[in-house]
Image (tube, rainbow over the protein chains, first blue to last red):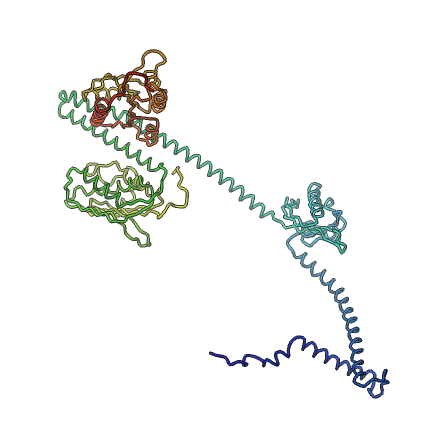
Amino acid sequence: MRQRPGTTGAPAGLRSALTPTAVAVSVVVVVCLLDLGLAIRAHGDMAHRTPLLSLPPFVEVLVLVGTSLVALAAATRSRLALIRAETARVGADEEAKRLLQVIDNSPAVIYMRDREGRYLLVNRRYEELFGIRREEIVGRTDFDMFPPEAAADFRANDLKALASGAAVQAEESVPQVDGAHTYITLKYPLTDIAGRHYAICGISTDITDLKRAEEEANRLNAGLESRVRERTAELEASTRELDAFAYSVSHDLRAPLRAVAGFSELILEDYGSALDATGRDYLSRVVAATTRMSRLIDDLLTLSRATRAELSWRPVDLSAMARRILADLRSAEAEPDRPMELIVEDGLHATGDPALLELALQNLISNAWKFTAKQDKALIHVGVERLADGGCAFFVRDTGAGFDMRYADKLFVPFQRLHSVDDFAGTGIGLAIVGRIINRHGGRIWAEGHPEHGAVFRFVLPERRPVLREGGTR
Amino acid sequence: MNDSPILLAEDNPDDVLLTRRAFTKNGFDNPIIAVADGQACLQALLPEHGPAVDPALVLLDINLPKVGGLEVLGRLRADPRTRIVPVVILTTSREPRDVVEGYRLGANSYVCKPVSFTTFVAVVRTLATYWLRVNEPRPRTGVVP
């Protein structure tokens, strides 16, 4: 909407007439006219006045106005001075009272001492705390109030403020009825009109509780740090032990096993004809058992390595990895033509340790392969799906033997097997390795299955390396 | 066909016996000189006095008493007399640090001993065929630079 000019306020002419100068001039004129009226009343009728000079009446009026103005100004000035003096006297008392109220209601201890350390003033908090009235303390020093060391300490801070000519801050320990209190004290010199530092003002705030809390926090922190150090040392020690154990497992446990396997095979080979069928069967079982134990040792070592290995974070193409693993399984299969449907979705990208993720995927896919072995037409599907929470989970799904959900929590525990060795061979460590690897990446894994209706293993990996530093000790 | 002896550094007598058997089973009749610790291995190859064993191949275990296998390897590679003698690490350790250290110190091969004897026989066949038949042996005349 458009506004018509001139409707927003006073007309331009009137507005310019109301400038401050114009107003001041108007006031002076009005005052002069009033004063003229008063003068006429005081000196009588204009007609009876003796003219001082033979001047025209308007000039006389002007002179009258002028002298009246001067008189008025002088009168006003002196009156103002009187009022000011009075105000100053009453104001100073009032001011002092107010200031005293301020300092008396302060929770801080406030005091004033002269250059020699003699008290000039203390606030109510001081009175309460040290049981002395402010009238009684005047003239005394801290050496009359506190033990010598404390008094010397306070005096030293006073002198510091005097010497520096500025405010100084210090922590002071003050002996009180309930023990030593810690104060944070601000001291500054007070200056008289001549610019001389004639006194010290101190404002001391009790920070005992704060100090105690701080000390407690420090103590707890120090304790925490030393506990963390201890725990880290313990963890490092146990990692070293685990390391040494894994090493000796790989060396020392396998050697006797090799002897058992080797000589059993040699007996079968060299003296097999001297044994009957049962004897040969027994020896074959010994050999088979050594093979299983050897696999067990290998898997344990792999589990230990998956736990200890330092993670190197890189982009990983799980699709390519899964295809490679399936191709290897296919070529190692006794019946490479077993009808199977293998689906590997494209674009399964993750970030993590390539070797460990391959080991995890290898175990999951081998598992699916193993548990579908007895089916005529099995399906293994490696893919990705969106979860209810918006995240994405990779999955390995199979149509194999499945499992009872009642035992789902045992799946990722080492040596826990949900099927007999006769049905499906295995050490019961494979899924534990998978679980360990996914956990070390900061991800999670879970499974869903139904007996004879397949299983699906889902896992989520963080998009990138977690911010928390990966400890080598987990 | 290289018919020089094979130096086997192995402290487990069972393994020594099985290794000997694996060689003969594969038709390799090279003498096998077994030493039970690292010190004895160095003594055989780098004696202070007397003649040194000049093997076609050294089979070196890592976990050896007195002087460990990797240290033995390091010393062999540091000495001009044994700088280029073929050394195959034959061990149970699959520890990545051992494998890496073995190669770094100049092992010619790193082979893991399998538990199954049948498999071990096959491994020995491959090793012996390569080092004693396929591979060109180093010249024995003259001083190795």
